[in-house]
Length: 166
Image (cartoon, rainbow, N blue to C red; front, side, top):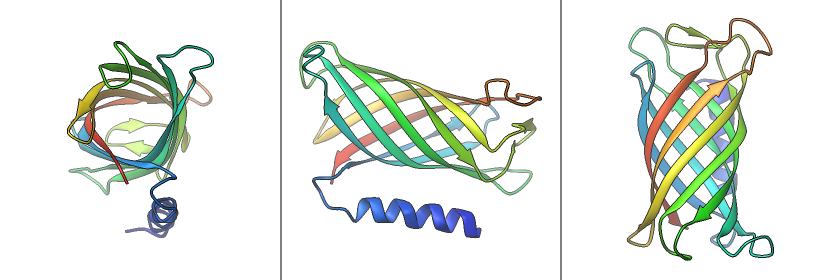
């Protein structure tokens, strides 16, 4: 584990130590468009936006994205992922989330992809539903620097995650 990933893990641990009222935990596993394993660990909070619409919420999340690699050392990113959540049929039913956040990667390469910049935008779309005491969600996420610097070899992750209250 590198010094940077150790610092990111320590920051995540501090967020988790804040107590049950601060946040929930989401763990997601999947693959990148480069066919490498992706693991995402986030702490988040859902804030109701009932004053705008009774089915609309704001999800604020932060965490780590860990990427494996068969050809070189893997990569990791610190994430900040806000998104809007629309619940289709009430508070505990099917929901759709979409948002644009940011990621700060340790390296500017993911397998054969050259990201050019450590900072990447994170575009996320997820579909989920309640499951047991938490929520199950399938998410498609695209990482790209939006043309800030060339080349702009973005990549995607497809993950299945479970969010549970702390």
